[in-house]
Every structure is written in structure tokens, then in C-alpha cells.
Image (cartoon, rainbow, N blue to C red; front, side, top):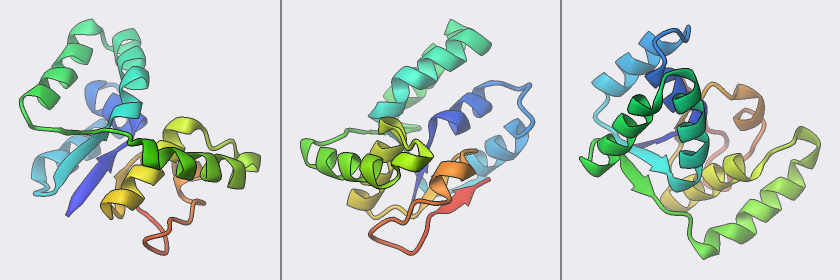
Length: 137
């Protein structure tokens, strides 16, 4: 099994002041799932971690990817039509490109679990490959 990591989950992991920090850290330390970081979240993650915690923490996250602790997943050109479809379908809820790309990647890989604090968006999206995502924490 695999777990996709959303921007806010990664930011919360890096920022010890976040209320969900310990829960997220425990989940990631105890799971045997493959931890997947969609490439599309990296600019947001870098921005928020650098701003809130510092550049060294942003670099540490990238090092975790280089070291293989986190798997980086590319967005394929074939994912883009699905991103557009999701953004149009959920336009009233302001589903943006990053969230749409996470869904498209999850569908392509068959991933059902997402580490995210964004229940508002991911809770309403109905993926093609399952009834609903399991959202952690």
C-alpha cells in the first residue's frame, strides 16, 4: 500500500508548533506504506516550510526524497486532462491544480490514502478508483 502526502501534511510534519505535528509524525514513523510526494506539492511545501520553519527544514525534506525515505512521483502529461476535469467539476469548491494533481496521481497509482489536513477539498472529491479517499490523520 501507498500513502500520498499533501502539502499541509508535510508542512505540519516540519513545523513542531502545528497541533497535528505529533500525530502526523507518528503515522509516518510507524507505517510500512510507501510514502509518495507528488512533485506538484514541492513548490508549496518549500514556500511554507521555508517561511514558517526555515530553509534548512525545506532542504531536509528534499534530502529525505534524495535518500529514498520519500518517493517523488511525477505528474505525467496524461494526468493533465484529469486535472482539468476535476478543476471544472469542483469549480464551486475551488479545487486548485495542486489538489487536482494529487487526485490524478492517486487514481493513476491506485492510491486510496492521503495524508492531508484538507478535509474540505479531499472529502468531497469522488475519485474514479474508489468510493472516497481515506484521509489521515
